[in-house]
Amino acid sequence: MKDMQELLLCTVGEARQRAGTQGEAPQLAAALRAQGCEAVCIVGARAAFAWLDTPHARGWLATASQDAEALAARAREAMGRGFVAADALIVAAMASPHALPLLSWGEALPDPPRFAPAQRRLDLYAIVDSADRLRQVLDAGVRTVQLRIKTPAQPDAGWHALLREQVQQAVADSADAGAELFVNDHWRLAHELGATGVHLGQEDLLALGDEGRRELRATGMALGISSHSLWELARARTLSPRYIACGPVWPTTTKDMPWVPQGLDNLAWWCRAAGAPVTAIGGILEPREVEAVATTGTDGVCIVRGLGDEPRLTLPAFEAALAAGRAHPLQELPAWPHPSLPRGS
Image (tube, one colour):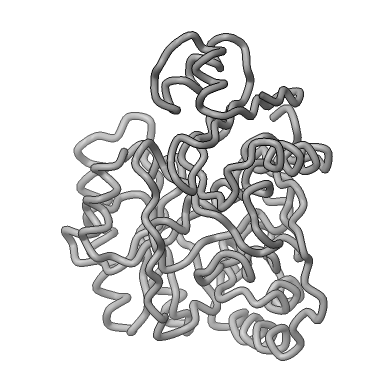
């Protein structure tokens, strides 16, 4: 049994002895955390998997090694580099720098990802808050769009009627333009109205539970998933998404978030390790920033406010910047990512 500041890493037998019960790994870890362990990792409960339970994530972590001593040493080294326990355990489970392991969403073992070859790149990806704005960026030539209409604290019947109208119009206009549309959050309504894609954050996906995630996947809609950390990236892969968003690349005022900016180094690492198309998001306002992120190999570049009031006038410069960045890819890719969440968060 290894105590490492915030992390306790042990075998199943050791966990049972310390917890004073014969339960399974998820229950043992919960009991150990209730005793005061901030984060727990139990190896040997499932072949090729360890169970982790930390302040930021819990689930089955794929790991080729069941050697608690070796995992503890790697996790200790990662925590010394500033990673929180959940990300330190992801790093410890990696057989090589870009061999990202899988992490389950709950107590069901994670599904191996099955990525279908994409028929197109996402390219410039406009995120808008109304059907009128969506039509405007489509008319300008954008062919990847997201309709993001957030639910108010107390939605009434009028708001639900307006949301339905907005999604219906967005679906129709995107189909007419031959564009790829992702509806943020409202996936059941999106499916009902014929949308072919949705985008969900990790908290929303967690809240669905195993049954809800199975229902979502059964719709056949293309899925975009947000990610900000290694554990979120490892978890997102199990749903075989159309893309995984990496952010924030740079500081952003669009959302109040605890994350350290990813920078070009983490974005490049995401693109190599994700196993799925990656989109860059966060703080991308100017063509020069699009050019910079395009050098990392990102499949798409999300722009929330940068297109301005006249997308027809601003889009050509962004498209030229995307092409210029892709023409000069980074020559040196980082072997390891840097922490994206400060210790103690």
